[in-house]
Image (cartoon, rainbow over all chains, first blue to last red; front, side):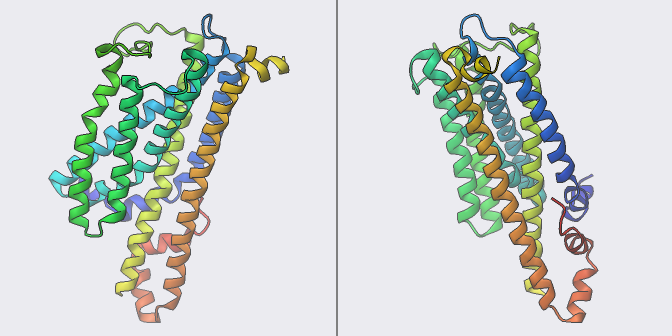
Length: 235
Length: 75
């Protein structure tokens, strides 16, 4: 199965895909922004400030999902010695960090009109900040270590330590008394969010996921060309 | 209608700044990654040009190299 995951074969697909992903992203984002800023209703308590949710929540979801994927790929890559999985993980990290920062900043902007403060050392905000630090450590490790095997080992350790933080982020609102409200969207049970607010949230999540895919494809192609550049030096 | 979209009952500044920050971040990261991609690709093309005919023929026999050279405007 893994022979189909060889960079040469993947590059044939990844080099052509970005333009289509970019087009799909622009279309979905335009629909999402129209829904989020104009068509969706205001909240009875938070009024129009609730619209910040349409960028804050999808950004947090994508950032958590990306870190989980990076950990899984690093772990499988390390166990089965699949170097390409590390390359995929490395290419996923920039968009994960970007969405983590977006979640923190938009959360801070939302906090001012809702809680009266830009920042609070609340369990969820603090654990999201810790996740951003793990993303940074992961990316810095790729920059500072030149030996591949050492880099694979260090980045795998960073992701394994960081993944402990992911369930803490998810359940922080249940485990501690925080400023954040409990989850409004549940996959297994009934969601408490109204459908008119759920739709824009799903559309914006799809748009951010497409952007994440776009950045991943471009970064992955760049990394492959970097490897090929080294190969030409050795010829 | 437009006034309501802009001011949003006094929350306009918060809502718009959150959306503008998000969109600017997306555009910035896209430009950074695109620049890195173009730089690496140009480096590859320049290096390929310096190879002698025998080495160039060998390098070109690898499908991925052919793909990089043929996709000069893929994004």
